[in-house]
Figure 1 (spheres, rainbow, N blue to C red):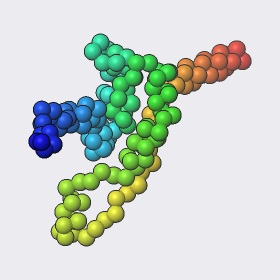
Figure 2: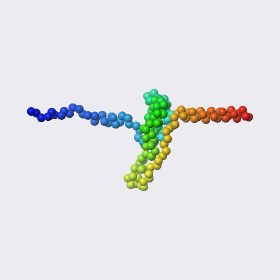
Figure 3: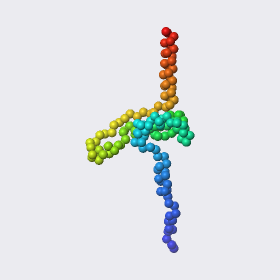
Length: 148
C-alpha cells in the first residue's frame, strides 16, 4: 500500500498580492502633511474645481490629506477617531535631519516640541462669520447715519 498523498503546490497564496494590499489606501506621511500645513495650506483648502476628485476637490481635510464628497461628510469625518488620532500624531513636530544627527551623537539632544493642533474651519462657517460681521457693521452704519 502506498504512503500518504503528495501535497500538491499549485496554489501560490497571496504573497504576490500583499504589496498591493499594503499600498492600496496609503496616505501622506506625517512629515509631508506637516509641510502642507506650514507651506501649502491656503492653495489646498481653496482648490479649483476638479471633476476627477471626490466632491470636485472642494472638501479637503488638510490633516488627513483626504477629499470628501460633501461638507456634511467632512463634518462627520471631523468627529471620527481617525481624524482625532491624526491630530494627536501631528502635535509632535516630525523628525528632521538635524534631529537624526543629534540622535546619532552629532550634537546635544533637544526634545521635540508639542504643538496645539485644531481642526480646520469649514468654508460655510467662515462665510457665515464674515456675513455676520458685515451685517453687524451695516446695522451700526445705518444707526449712525440716522442719528446724524
